[in-house]
Image (cartoon, rainbow, N blue to C red; front, side, top):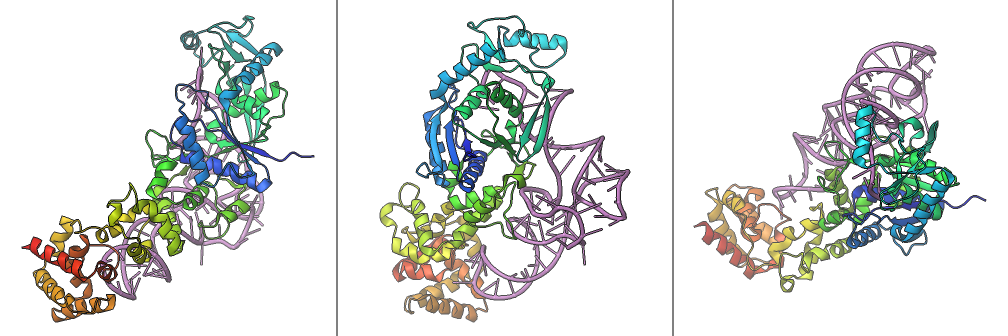
Length: 469
RNA sequence: GCCCCCAUCGUCUAGAGGCCUAGGACACCACCCUUUCAAGGUGGCGGCACGGGUUCGAAUCCCGUUGGGGGUGCCA
């Protein structure tokens, strides 16, 4: 009987959750979904100096935002690597007892010195036959056997490493604590992991870890190393230099569905001529063997385009709900009391086709929820530059005082004034728009004017006229 | 330096020897629509890194060159 596949995602909580990590998590999740297997989440929190519980929560939040939820039957964990320290040490002792590892008392400086003198890089196996026992300051190193190690990779095929190029790597630090290479394998073994899908930066670790698996008496898992995500300089995305925090994108108003879809088009593509597809289609079609082998540029512009697409695809109701966090509460640029949900609901269809990020929404409607709009000076100056600007605006204002207050009627008024001065509506409305909204661009004008009401609009026009003189 | 991986429009990709005059998407440009800005529609720009093979035939297979990337920690 073949075992159900057990995939795993093993991030370390050392900072904001990375988009590259999100993609790796998605791969593992989809694979678990496809196969009826498990997605095991393991937090690798063994680097005390860089760990912080807040990051662990961030990982959990981000995953569930992406639909990778602990309540799902495919989800297992989270497990914490730090809780398994005893098992790691036990495994290390076993390797030592078997003769697959040995202790070494050389300091990093001494190793460097030897390396320099011999002209060969890395550790030279100095303590291999010195029969040292454990002791403070002594590290335990794996005795890399002669020969070669072949890694079967689901995306790259067969990759062969000459063991002579792999130094006797450290298993236990001088203080007795296990390093990643060991802890990672021991946890995979004890958690019955069958498939390791991770970023390409781990490919050089694969032969080492495979040797540990074997030495521990286990069949290595199936490996898959997916290409890394890079920035415009084609360097691996880094927390220091690049905008990589999933949380940040979420706060800007990137939709989870858009993020998932976009991430999945990096290094892979669904069938057909459309990249924007339901997650179900991706889940059905994704296949490791068809993942590209080269790094992919994380293009924020394209992400935004995907997001705009997803925003437009929402029903108006969904869109309104999605906007709420940016309209009420701390993120809103106006006081909660002055926000009018009914007014926004009227405007919603008009702004829906005009935003790429949800955070762009407030600035399109803020003029509706303030006493007077914030005037953009450059826009104002430009709109009132023509000699006809003030005069026509006065005519419009006077007509607005008595005309029917509907979008069509208001439009007819402005058109009529324009006709008198041989000006097109497009030009005519510029001063009016700046007077009412404070800006030169925005959603269609006459609907919000109606929403604002006659009194408020006349007040704004007068204020603008006054500012002009 | 050494080890490993990779190479199709600017970017993300489709392409599994003839379906390729290389398809789509983002970006960009033009036009249409239009109440500014968007959205939408139509069209355009733009690519198989190079050199050798193999083959009747190569973007696809092989070798080399060049170029990129990853790794090279008592980080993960």
